[in-house]
Length: 230
Ligand SMILES: Cc1cc2nc3c(=O)[nH]c(=O)nc-3n(C[C@H](O)[C@H](O)[C@H](O)COP(=O)(O)O)c2cc1C
Image (tube, rainbow, N blue to C red):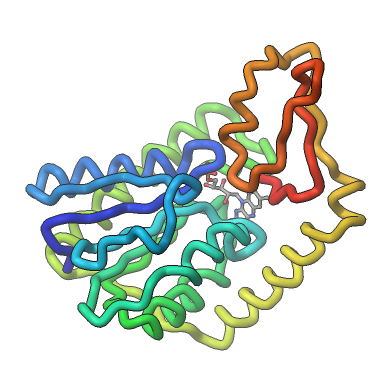
């Protein structure tokens, strides 16, 4: 069961996870629970208040999640206060390498894992759906998010423990992330800005969670070799 105050740390590349986190935040507030939303990119694990319940929300990537999200989870402070923690991720359909491994990390740090949920939302990597299907997926996803938040409030949620399959998916994902971060992949798939569409505001520079974008002298964004393809 969650406490009276929740600090909900989330990352969302294209908005699916943000919608889920906001929906859950609304349910918590309806139940009289204070839910503070914090972006993972703008937060330091050291500043976490261990007297509050901790929420983690992020997208699935390559069967688990992005390196910088893993780093945030791995750097969570240890707790001796039995701090409750829950997680939610959003995905297009296949995961496996995140729920179990996150459980193991947070439990070793002394947290009380109270719930984990994976919620299917529209894919943001291959745009294979029409708008109508995407809308339906979002609606269904938000219903599940609301129900999950209610389960957390009454202590009726679960968190699957790591299994051999989850570790297999985790290690496949680690290998995938290693390839993604390799210099060959970074050079082959280096992102480029469409000059005709860029207004040179520099918003991308501020939003990139891995600080991979800079503005050149002509104010055109330049992408480095540290991309996580968010
Ligand atoms: C680089 C990348 C890798 C992804 N890998 C997976 C995956 O392994 N399994 C899956 O079901 N969805 C995968 N997705 C889809 C996203 O997890 C899904 O659309 C998610 O809801 C996006 O959340 P966001 O809008 O908060 O960023 C991937 C998306 C990206 C951009």
